[in-house]
Length: 399
Image 1 (tube, helix red, strand yellow):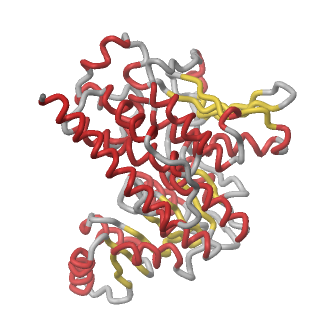
Image 2 (tube, rainbow, N blue to C red; image 1 turned 30 degrees about the vertical axis):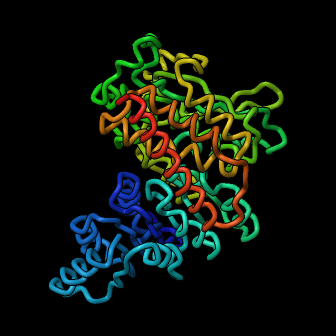
């Protein structure tokens, strides 16, 4: 949908080979007079990075290791492409995020791996499109403070928070009573609680609505993903946990809602296509025209339910971590990642995920890190503690 546009926005994509990164490139391809690629951080996928270099000719591309970067460099030279800087590791991702030519940074690296680069981009006064909830959960207090200091916009790409951002444009922040994050309820919304111990990995990976990566699919099944979104929403929109509500909406048609003090509820409804929130963030404060149209017949049935905290204890744990913030939010995310991996490896039952997180949170001291280095240190400690909890559990079961 090319059209005349006065300023070409150059985009750095952290996580260019993942689903958000590929969707971002799709948007850039559709709007060549609005957006261009500045730099890419491609992780371990050398082939995809090579193909993206051929197509987009970025100024700089970063890979996970020096060996992978050397392989990409050889392939680019063989193709006659010598103008692309190839970097690696955390420093390479930071260089991609802070490239002087970049106007906008899409933060889409899974987990805390892209945290340092995202923070560096804020420090460099880049506008940020956040598709990584873990960064805001682990270091949201630091990122939002830095963004205020540098006058940088943190624009959510995650569909629920993007929906909230859109709805909050209708009124002043002081007029917002509370926000509602919608959740599909996952595959076990109606499964009897007594059957949760029998849930298999294969069954947990069959999400009724979305096709996602393995960890986020399990997080959806436990509703921990919604718990992370609660913490992210508190930080993005400067709200207390009591003002961030969750409603189970199986149709996944309404992406989220904002309730104003006069009782008005504003909902954001659109196609379930990540290109739309990406386009919204890239174009903000404007709205770019698109062909991503919503079929109104899908509104024939809309159901909303209260979440069951007994069925989904991870949601209760997330609210507790949101109240304490700091180290507890970091521990929630880190312990979940370790526990989900153990479940995927058939080392613990489905209910063991929440049990592991709860034990880690119980032994996590209250603290509020002041630097990204302290965040990463607390993250590492929480992972070690989660592995100790799992090892102790395994030893107990073998007795």
